[in-house]
Image 1 (cartoon, rainbow, N blue to C red):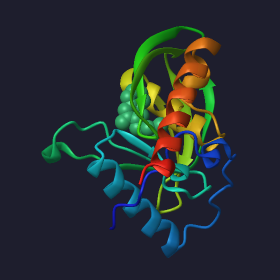
Image 2 (cartoon, helix red, strand yellow):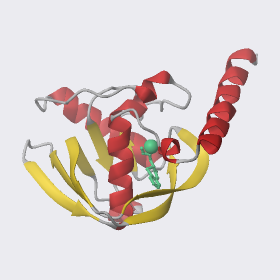
Image 3 (spheres, rainbow, N blue to C red):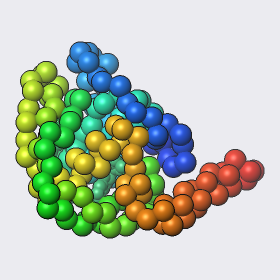
Image 4 (cartoon, rainbow, N blue to C red):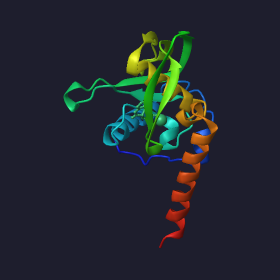
Length: 173
Ligand code: GNR
Ligand code: NI
């Protein structure tokens, strides 16, 4: 399960709308395993396939903070089928926007329908951190980043900062 390189802001790939996974092939299982390895290595609590450059609707999540309590969740073609009117504010970060954190307001609870790697359809209601994380990951499948939920000023600032950093990378010897 090799760790794959992360796609970073301002890479245009992050703006792609990912395509449905469709049938769960060995290739899909291998991608899920690599995504988990990449997420644990980072470390992060969630990862969408586009963050390793693959525009397919596959998400991995694990809220376990310690290695001993690993509880990986793989979501194939996840969709939000219900969101609460109540909202909550939580500080978010993104592995594609390293070391930038801001508070984001989102629905407090969501109901998510997805398939697991055995092809079974699952529906689950999430609150707290899992709710925030699932919404953040499903946004990635639609080319949406958490900075899109901030003010234009904050978003423009962080994009400019990462554009400059990327330019330095290509100019520096
Ligand atoms: O590791 C991550 N932490 C996190 C914290 C608050 C809200 C969302 C997240 S997801 C993020 C990993 C990531 O970028 N997933 O797409
Ligand atoms: Ni992210």
